[in-house]
Image (cartoon, rainbow over all chains, first blue to last red):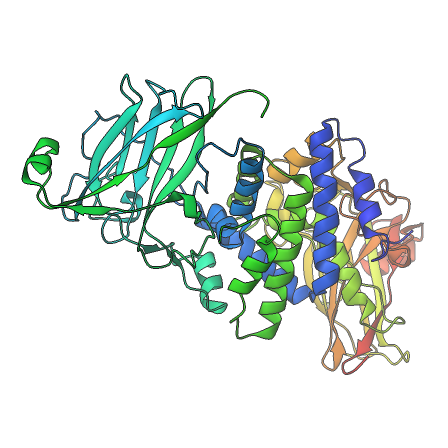
Length: 289
Length: 289
């Protein structure tokens, strides 16, 4: 019997019937249903479908050691944030909210001491970021690992920039005996996601702006706790209400207050005045939510 | 307001609201709906979604000048055949049925004279393929262009094989004054689609076989007519009932009859006996269907 529009889902789902792993079978069957649903809805010409194939191919070909264009595509389509939001719904609601990983976690953060600066160039506005990692019960988590990465004051990550050595704007910290962490940096700028690839072409063609509000990435983990991948957003940054990747959560926005205090600046090895943000992180214990 | 599962489609669709091209806007909006529908259905963990991103990235990275792994993915998911089937439904029903292009139309077919052989190695079973290109009214179409490509008797296309020079198994012919074409070749074998990439890994993991029944690809075109992209399938070939890419149409299956006729063989420059198939192609005139 010839393949037909009416029976296309059944025919292709049947081909996956012997999949041994039940989860893989579930995912492939659902993908067939939704992919065919999209095609029946849009009814592409063959020429249009070929353009779609070219677009996906170009996304894959744009990826390299320092560039993940498929994550970027997932991000601008809201897919990353939807997956993230569904995962967060499985977690306890009193833990720190998570948000998207993004495409720039492609370099291992250099191990640094508490209080160190993650910025080696000093061209931006100096800041101190500090906080405590605790469980939901408020008990500190000594030794928690805090992985940080951020763009600079011009909105560029190290891997995008000739100005910055690899590892700039990145640091891996270990919380002290009271679960505290602190590090020096510069206030990151809002920035455009990379637009020199197929995802940038899509944004241009659809008249979407590519900007993300200023933020610092965090992954915080400790044995016995569910790790959290999140950002702290800089209050007052442009694009907090129209993030190109839909990742802003109000609970993650923090004031980076200006501090003019000669003694305090000297104590942290910072110029006076400096900016200061506090971001306490609450982790959920592992085990059934 | 934070991004939520309930409002995810609305939030992302709204971001595409200023798309100037109405068709692009329609396609992106539908893609958002179906992509988010798939994600809400499957509810991937972040780790699973990362595996999905890795899979798509690997597909893109596998593509090169002679390999189109995204077409292969589209093929095994039945997407290519669904697009093809919907396009065919827009065409007149008395024209020759079309089927998938496949991933091997990556080398320009060498121009050849009617009666030439597209096989330069002579290792397979010799055959003659011939037919007439006409309009639906039966009127011949002189000068119709017939682009042919096929696998060899071991099931390999030139671009996959060290045994074959590029262009082997390919030919571009021009129909004579009575719309007739004929060429010599070898009977192609059934074959596995390429399995040394991510699509092969998917077939292995889902216990799907990678085989396609034996066939010869045709693209036939002439000014004033709708081009047709199709195959002629070899009757009796294995996998006619379980093509890995769902592309068999009963109306495209032809007997490759064995002919034992010394004079006829000599007339065509073929060994005796030889195989012979007739495939007449009917094109639809351009214009409203």
